[in-house]
Amino acid sequence: MPAGFVRTRAVDESGSTWRETGTLPLPFETAVAALKGGLAAGGWAPVHDIAGGGAAATRRILFFSGATNDLLVAAWPSGDSETAVRWGLSAKAGESGQIENRQTTGNQ
Figure (cartoon, rainbow, N blue to C red):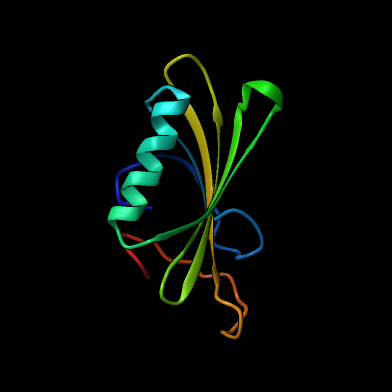
């Protein structure tokens, strides 16, 4: 995730759950567009964009691929002008298979 992009609420270094949980001070659709654009600009290649939450599509799962890691981002509305975000990294298939526990500022 681009440094300083998400207001961090919790960080988990265990490697067994989401790496970071936080919020973006943006309405949901604006936040999703900002996440996609910011990550692509950081060298992450978009792979999947899955909308959920019924017809309103109030939940999104974004999957990006980097050189050595994959990035999974979950986003959902947390109010009129705020979006909740969780993200995690994993090693690509054929790599160590362990969850990476480091801050990411670009395509790692």
